[in-house]
Image 1 (cartoon, chains in turn red, orange):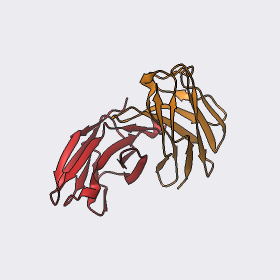
Image 2 (cartoon, chains in turn green, purple):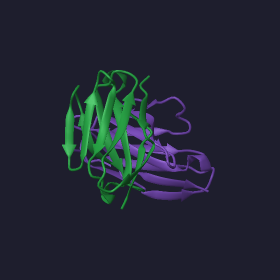
Image 3 (cartoon, chains in turn purple, yellow):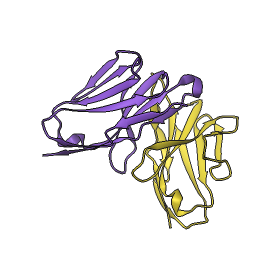
Image 4 (tube, rainbow over the protein chains, first blue to last red):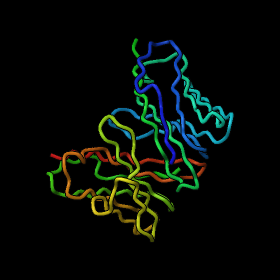
Length: 112
Length: 113
């Protein structure tokens, strides 16, 4: 059974500094996703990572995937207040029904 | 990517009653997923709904409590039955879309009093 773990669960950031969120998964996964959720809102798709070594970047966010280590990271560069949200990673195993299994989420608060 | 209309957006319900949540997709999709997000928690899959067959429920979720309908390839409903305060959560539907992505509905915030 696929299990996905994120850490840290909570991250207090200072504006302008760099931070990383880690996402480990327990079995071979076909795809790895990162989502953002603002309070009271649904999920916003950030990245989908399909293969080992994949790296995607959008603005101050960069996600990478190491399938051998079963690890994905979400790196935040020069944090700004607008990035305050909860970030989730999720993995999929196609053979297990193509369903997303989510990590516990990382609540990010960026302080001035 | 697909667009999902989810209703209602929120509701406050009395314990012992039932609430039906609807998701309408603007294109035909094979698989629809229903998730529960308890306060301050992550998303947990309730069931996968395929058109023309019974939904497949995850461990800890049963059809009597969360009956699901999937009458066609663009629509699904989830009913939360005989509600208790522990059912207070956000419920989200999701579909797998092209380009390996998943789209989520806007969510239904349920409060049971």
